[in-house]
Length: 197
Image (cartoon, rainbow, N blue to C red; front, side):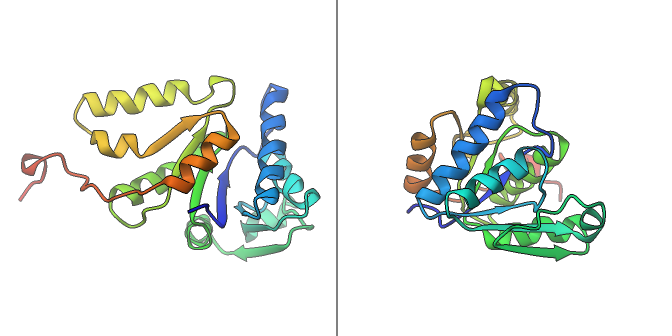
C-alpha cells in the first residue's frame, strides 16, 4: 500500500552539487502529486527546507517537528501546514516516527544518519514494519550500501534485514517498492551463541 505520510531525513545544508537540490524538489513535488504528506524536521534551511517548499508549492501537506532550541535559533519553517515544537531531539525523533508510515533518507550528515539508523534499528527489533529507503543521489550512499553488505558478511546483520532496505535513484521505483513492501520481522540475533545468559 502506498504510504500516506513519508518521513524524509536529509541535510540542513544543500551539499556541493545542484543534483541534491534538484532531487529534493522532485521528491517534494511527487509527494504532493501522490497525496503523501511530508513529515520532517521542521527546518527552513538546506535540503530540509527545499523538500518542504516543494511539497507546499505543489499543494501538498508538510508537517515539521522541531526542538524548541532550534526554533529559538530561527531555523524553523514558519510556512508549514503544521509545525510541532518539542523539547528534545529524542522527542523529535519519536514524534516523527509516530506521524509517518515510511522513511527515506536523502543525502545528509550525522543527523540524517542518526535518524535513519534509529529507524533501521527499531525495525530490526520488531518495533515497526515500515519501509526504509536511501535515495542514492550521485552515488552518495553507495559506500554505505557496501558497509551494510560487509556487516552481513561479517555476521553482525542478517541478510533478510539488509534486503529490507532499498537503495536507488528512481522516484517511481522507490514508491513502487514502498507500495509493495511487506516487511516481516526477522529477529536481530544471528544465533543463540550471540546472546549472553
